[in-house]
Length: 441
Image (cartoon, rainbow, N blue to C red):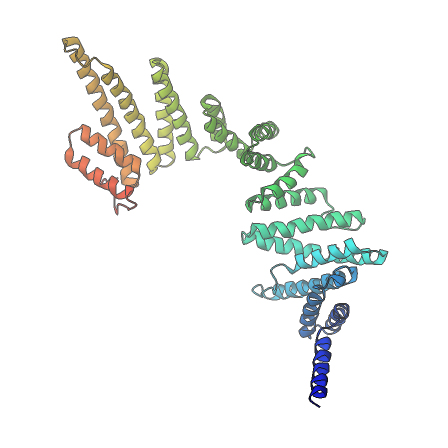
């Protein structure tokens, strides 16, 4: 008797489990019927939710994953979801989306259906679904771009490009049929990839434009940056030169060339580029500070070579550009510091001359020369001091300014101020901040 009861219990349990595990193919068909019910009565949103749940369950089975019809159903379900929700957003912009990118889900499903299709109508239906979802791939891609979710924007735009390629192969109408619009979309897709640090994908899209020979200037700049980061410096510089020849007035390429010349220490080449940039951006203070720095470096090079006339010429040029920077921004701490450093470094160069004098020569001529150089050094420090004071007034936590002030006051035997700036320097070096400046403008 007990064995009979156990057998009946086991039979009932097995029947229940078998019933609970529905046939995946049937689930896919049920999902399609639920979508049809929703389309007949769009107020019955529960049917759309049911369709989504059942198609996702069905596609977990390998047998269903091989069916173009199942993927077509999924594409139609997700396409319906995104169309419904985007329509609601037109009425209420704050209306949420249930998925992160249902347009992308729909496209991937339609693409799978297209790839698996064995019948003409299956390919046609999949292509039709892809055409309908294009606008939503664009809209959601733009939403992701504006939210600075560049990786997600790239995926949406990448799908948009793929959709165009499929529709073109089928000789169907696409949103990207206009050559200029297609070209622009290739660039935007590459840009999103680059902003997302997906350099391999960005390079792929930029190269599609570059190889056509009519790429916009930003493509040359983007490829230069990507190739440089990959360590392909020779290729990067060749692309940059091509871009500069093709777009001689493009500021992005110009600044890339300037930065390259700066990195390679090609000072004379740098001057040419900076002068052109100044013509295009006459109020860009960083250009004048950079130019001043270039001439400062040239000045120091000529001092080392003992070419005094050329050194004096470059010193005057450096001073001119730093002062021009102050005309643009009278409160530029960097400009004040640079002017102070110009005189400070000149004093340091003279100090080397002083140290080169014979230490055991106490003749009147040597002593006189020593005193003369010492006087010139102190005069140069005095000229640099007001600039450093103004720099400190504008930025009391700049380490280089505090070092200069501490050393100048020590040389002037003003131990109180030398100690004050040494304390302020220690605060910054220990990670702190001076609450206020010592000097006031």
